[in-house]
Image 1: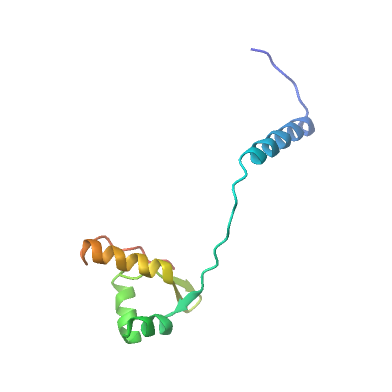
Image 2: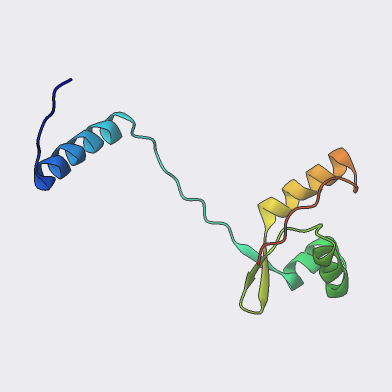
Amino acid sequence: METIVLTVKEFEKILKEKLDEALAQKRIPFEVKEEKLLARKDLARFFGVSLVTINDWMNKGLLPYYKLNTRVYFKKSEILERLDTLKKYGRNNDRIDQRN
């Protein structure tokens, strides 16, 4: 095995070139999906239940949610995914962790 001595600048240059090459070969289109967040009120309207029921489901770990200061938001896609899971496996499956 041969030892090569490089300055930090030379090493950074080589590393950058190799990374650029690798990234150019692996160009994967990156698409950011923007998803509108639902407030508790929106979710209650969606399900046709009261805010108290939404709070109860949150406390039981049945709904995945996000907290921003004192406000609570839900991703519609996660709620629909959770509904599919509940339909498939019933109510006694593992709860989704609450996200604070």
